[in-house]
Amino acid sequence: SAAADVEAMASASDAETGAADDDDLRFVYVGNFDFFTLEETVEAAVRDLLGEALRDRVRSMAVPGWRDKRLEDGTLKPRKKRDEGKRNRGFAVVEFDTPQTGRAAAEALDGVVFETRALRSSAGVRADVRGAPRRRAEPKSETAAEAGEVSEAERLRRERRAHNRRQKRRKKARDDAALEEALRNLLRSHPLWEPCAESQTIDEPEDAERAEEPLEEPLEDASSDRFAENASRVSSTNLDTREWWDDARWRGGWGALYSRWRDLDFAKALGAVDWENCAPSVDPAGSNTKGGTERGRRKRLQVESFRAILVAARAVVGRRPETTNASPPVVVDFGCGTGNLLLPLAAAEPSMRFVGVDVNRRSVELLAERAARAGLTNVDAVCGLAETYDGTCDVALALHVCGAGTDAVLLQAQARGAAFVVAPCCVGKLKDGGLKSISAMKKDVLDQTGTPSASGGGEDDGIFAGGGEEVLVRPGKSHAPITVIHPRSSWMRGRIQRPAYLGLAAAADWSGHQGVDPLSNSEQSKALGRFPRDAKAAVELDRGAAAAEAGYGVRVMKMAHEGAGLKNDLIVGFPKGADPLREFVEGPEACFR
View 1 (cartoon, one colour):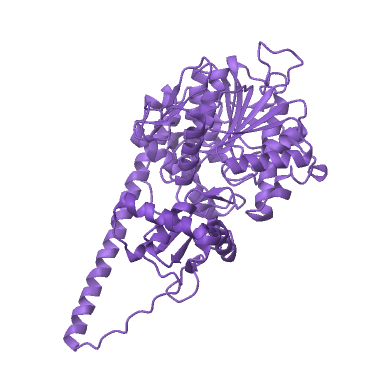
View 2: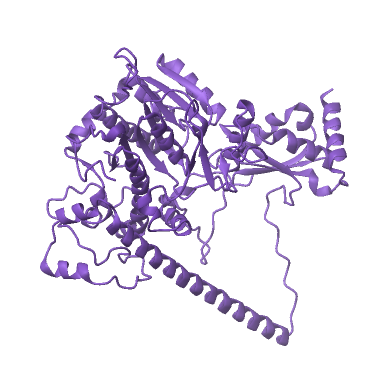
């Protein structure tokens, strides 16, 4: 019977561990739930996933709601933008009748997929499963002397905390100053900086003098300009400023190395998708279940920004020398998820073949289901890693693939001489770090495909070398494995070491987490966003320079649409130095080495 199986599992667990029963093992942690899922939905899901035998052994369950902090006056502290709408804290704690059952339940739940996320479960959690706050003990009566001692201890504690906060602020100021200095040196050393700098105009004579002055010590005030305060500034006259970051300071600094559409309205027309007549399963706004209507709208704009580039470059996109005119180009969307980018493009471009690749098996299944409902016959879905994809690829796409995953996509394209359009995300995550759910899914895929590990064996994911800090890309067929090294380009490697680069990448990993509103023109958004904006530009230009050093024609751009999100940098590359966007964009040359 099912109950007997549970007892057998528990007994086997006891025999393997040889550990004595511990009452804490009755409590099982189940994590990696989506923060936006209702608490009652999480509880019902845990009970369903346990199965009848284990479900009957549950004594209690708590799904802690999202914890809002209170200010000193007792009012709720306003949530950060990233926390708006969150309902739970991402986990549940389940109490079982015996420690043996707890261990069996943890083993049964670990790795189970719910809402496309692999759950993580472990027994032995010390927790109040009722989720109720514990009452504070009533203070004991004190003598006057004791009260004086407590008061003095409290004063010293507060002074120590204030001192620690000052120390942290000073350290951050020093670290920021070092990164700003590195950014300034990197900008001026870029192969295309001199031609770009010469083409800029200076407002007034005193501005030219200020450009030669040394950079002042950075102010701790968040409203101060933190990088290139005294650098040359382009005139703000006639600037078509659309979003707060697109200002004279940006265009006179790192933005000078970015390409921009000559006619923005023309670019939007190129990428336009007839959303009104789109199948509901294809429309990211219609199929979006998280993030609300705003996220759906943002995804639409991202799709149109990608399509504008594909249409503008249609003459050279996806034409391999060995193919005939009848062979449709193969466009591979790496990290495709459930198809928010791939499906609209496949519907709008029926003459192209689209392949979606993702490590999450459930996401791949949903992609296939959405394509079938829309009647799309030019879509294939593959469960696998971007690092080990060995199929055909004429154009590589990647929308917000985290960390070194974007670098793997770029190397996959370069190994095949394919074009690429990528919008990097989370550049601070250069290794799997704490992404346990992703690591587990990667391991499952590698186990099923029999792909060897990077070190030739052992317990690592099979794509990491050197303790998990490097990604190994295996394009397959006759291509040799390629190791991702950071910094990516010889330009940046000659000027910054890896530890400093990791600090730069962490600073570049920006979003609404820092309180920056992509649609806001407030002084607060400008102050908070300038430094990470420049740091991210440096990281993406490093990736672009690496591709250019490999013989590609490369342009680094921003998405064409306002409101497409803060992570709106695009790296576009074409093999053999091709530059099909030349007539449509302005900016630095696409080919440099």
